[in-house]
Amino acid sequence: MREQRSIVLAILIVMASIAFAFLGAFGVILFGLFVIFICTSGELREHSPTSAVGRSPEQRAAIAEERIRSVAPLKFYRWCGIVMLVIGVAGFVWEQWQS
View 1 (tube, helix red, strand yellow):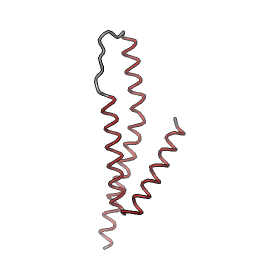
View 2 (tube, rainbow, N blue to C red; view 1 turned 45 degrees about the vertical axis):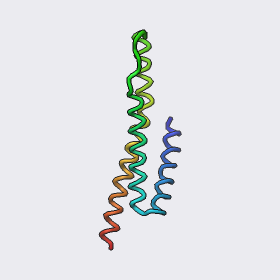
View 3 (cartoon, rainbow, N blue to C red; view 1 turned 90 degrees about the vertical axis):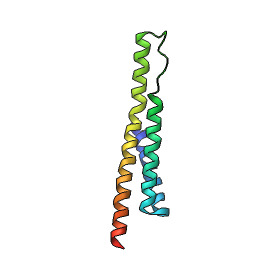
View 4 (tube, helix red, strand yellow; view 1 turned 180 degrees about the horizontal axis):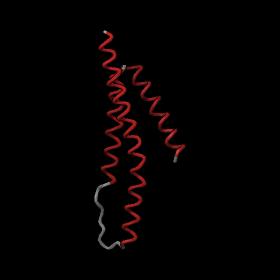
């Protein structure tokens, strides 16, 4: 699990660097917003109600635990998107201030 986070975090950093190379700080802002959107969308899909009719309490508890386990990485990556957004805004302000 930790290795996967490290690999995906490295991929996010490389993609943010590419966005910065092509579009400057505005590219990092767009990429951060994109990551936030994807993570929020995935988290909302995981919280969609499912039919609990005919399921035992153990089955419902197992489903709830699986949902929590699948949403935890999304929260981490959403925070990565927020950090990229903040860095992009700071970079954009810096670019404007330097001009």
